[in-house]
Structure formats: C-alpha cells, structure tokens
Image: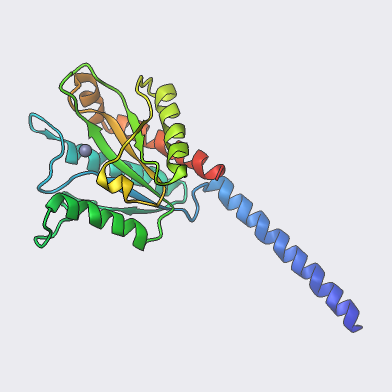
Length: 223
Ligand SMILES: [Zn+2]
C-alpha cells in the first residue's frame, strides 16, 4: 500500500470515529439532557437559622425536603448535583463575625470551588398578609444569564402552577456576590394556608422539582 493510500485510509477512519463520537454524544444528550452539567442545589437556612416560621413549621425543613427532591429530578436528567447542605446544619463558623454572613459566604465559595454551571437557591416566602401565595423567582443582574433563567422558570410557574406572581430582582448578599449563573426560587408562602398544605406534600415537592428541572433543561439547550 502506498503512503498516500494509508493516509487516505487513516483519514476515513478518523471521519468514521468522529461521526460515531458525535452520534453517541447526541444520543446521550437526548436521553440525559443535563449530562455533565454541574448544578448546585442550595437549601436555604439550616441549623440555628430556621428561616420563616409558622407555628412549629420551619422554612429550613421545607427547603431541605424540596432541595433533596430537586436533587433527584436533576440527577435523573444526567446532571452532576452538589448540595450546599443535605442535613439540618448551618455553614457558619464560630470565628465568623456575623454568623449569617459566614454561612452565605461559604455557599458562594462552594459554587466557585466546584466550578458550578448553575445554582438553584431554594426558599419559602413569608408575608404578614396571609392571602399572598404562589411560587416566584428572583435574580441578581450580576450575570446576564440570571434574568434568562429567571424568565424561563417564572413563565413555567405561571403556566403550570398558575402562580400569579412575577419575576423580581434581588440585591441580597449571596446573589450579588455570585457570578455563577443562578436564581433564588421562593417555592410558595409558608404564611398562606393553601401553599403551606401543598409545600409539605411529597407529590407537590416532586411537581415543583420537575418544573424547575424542565426549566433548567430549556436554559441549557439555548445557551
Ligand atoms: Zn428563606
């Protein structure tokens, strides 16, 4: 075989290999649309910080239950999922001047260290007017992708959960200091009777988690 023929053959083999690789890649993404994406699920509050409360019901516990469910739905779509906490703890240190600030600072450091593609911060809302209800999304303008993700998720909440709430901005410490794309999700109001009933139900936690996961898939498909 001449050198030229060998070269041609190697080139054809290279093309076949490339085609097969691209095919496998496309197939994986079709079945696991979040394959390889590093996502942080951040259950708000924890430990000494209960967040909002209604009687004995604490926001930190609802956040954790929702976050653990969301972890599962994201894993099922192929994502690599990290949790800022997976038990009832806060991330502050006794050396922190402000415990709350220390807790939030460590969450930001986690996102950076793991080179996260996205964070989803899970919280429950609270209002003195107990008729206020529904899921909503808040974002900070530090990353232009935040508004795009927020819009996708808020639209889904309006359509699939019939939420009457709108996309908002937040300037809270953690969100204005996090350059990794992400949003704050207030899943509903602990102060509203209907939301409170739903938010404690496993089936509703799964419903919200599926909706968030669907939104995240759309977000990455168009990035
Ligand atoms: Zn909260």
